[in-house]
Amino acid sequence: MKKQLSLLAFVIIATACSQKPEVIKIGHVAPLSGAIAHLGKDNENGARLAIEELNAKGISIGGKKVQFELLAEDDAADPKQGASAAQKLIDQKVNGVVGHLNSGTSIPASKIYSDAGVPQISPSSTNPKFTRQGYKTTFRVVADDVHLGGTLGRYAIEKLSAKNIAVIDDRSAYGQGVADEFEKAAKAAGGTIIGREFTTDKATDFTAILTTIKGKKPDVIFFGGMDAVAGPMIKQMKALGLNAKFMGGDGICTGELFKLSGDTIADEQVYCAEAGGVEGPQEMILADFNAKFKKRFNADVQIYAPYVYDAVNVLVDAMVKANSSDPAKYLPVLAKTTGFKGVTGDISFDEKGDIKNGALTLHSFKDGKKITIAVVR
Image (tube, rainbow, N blue to C red; front, side, top):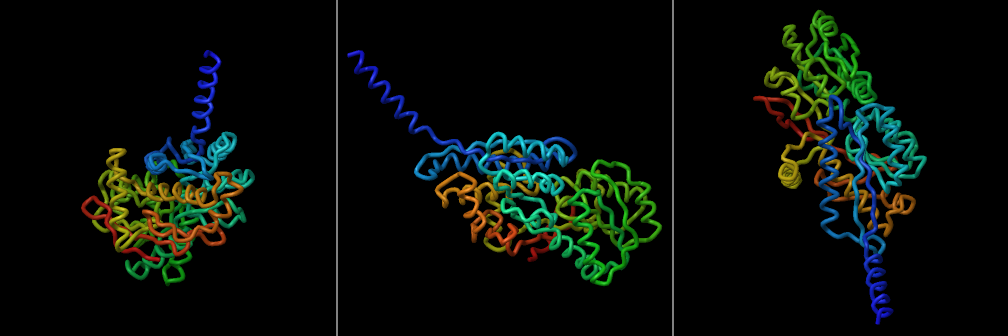
């Protein structure tokens, strides 16, 4: 009798073990400390929401039930820390990575992921170099700086009637890249660049730079960098009586910018472009996501969370179609992603890993709130 019970217990344990879900590890990297930690947490929450929903669905891959686990790392928007975070994820044998937030960390990390053969989808890195290194593992779900900076450059001349433009960048891969593309487009459209100045992504005092620029009487100041620097810069512009329009890329195009400027942004003083955007019926889909996000985290979407959410789902969709979470097996399927229905719109990758027909959304600020001007492609 005891032998029969022992055998029965063994069968029960063996059956339970055989039904235990396979754990699939999804890495996520963003700045969770430092000046733009609010953006990094926004990204992480987008990934967390996707993982929670996927687990609730009870997905099977290759005939086996799977459980997704999010491994979140902080790169502090620092290239060296970003590389360390990437290596840590590889050592933990992640099946795929969503991140990093910044081009300056995504680019050095991309070699580490490529060497390990692990797919990486960035939800927000826009420097063109990111997908032009020849790595088969590198993808992004937003338009790049050629499109973003170029659109803003033309907008400054054609819509804001700017003639004299000053350009400032924070010397990061993102900031310098988007400023370069803006400058090229503004010049091509007939504008004059009256000065190019530099700061850092940790600077807080811009008096000297702005005083120099003020003497040149700019119509527009373009800043390549993030909202944590742009906010104080706008505040100091007001203190100096510098009334030029202020422009920037998606790094400044956040709901926090008004607060970071000390509530000093005048109506339609600031113009920015967000990499991505929806229109028509897709607006309701994104609105539903935003409401779901707010309910789950008690916080509004900053900017990139929907793109992180889509990136996680695109990774998993490729795994399901490939019947495998092995990066070597699902990577070719991921590269052929076509028409994936995301909350940010349809996602298809070109041969470099860039999103096809990527959208941009032009914004301004009015009554202390970010308003949409237009979605362009």
